[in-house]
Image (tube, rainbow, N blue to C red):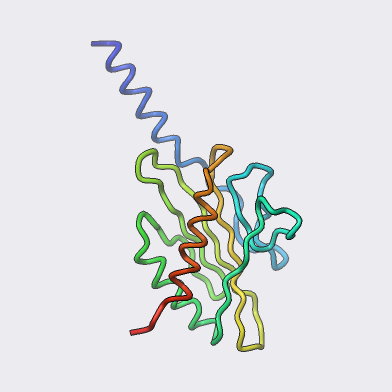
Amino acid sequence: MYKQISIITLSMMLLMGCSGTVPTLGINNSQLTPCPNSPNCVNSQQTSADEEHAIAPLYFTGTQQQAQVRLLHILKTAERANIVVVEDDYIRVEFTSQIMRFVDDVEFYFPSTAADKITIHVRSASRIGSSDFGVNRERIEKIRGEFNAFKPQ
């Protein structure tokens, strides 16, 4: 009986620790935080020479506010997504995996522009572990597909 309680207690402690600590995120000198060396991160502001981490930004024709409304609509309907920060030029979302409860931080940065063409920089990174089996890249590509296909009601 003691052995079973110990195993259950240890398992609970491990599962609770899977969320990791929130890294330093946000915008610094018009840049999202660079990806670490581990392959569990993508960032549209990485150099194209860094193929492992580089990903294309999202593009939108219209105003920054219209782009943000469209993106927030998609994020609000995403599974296991918790919108944490919404600012005029920045959105941060936490996605939690279904089984192990791992947390990935996803950021969207809307740099100011006078043009009608909006660039939305993206960063998606796992808080813990080394490999994410491509989950962060797949997540951004799924959001991109929904963003591009979105039809306002």
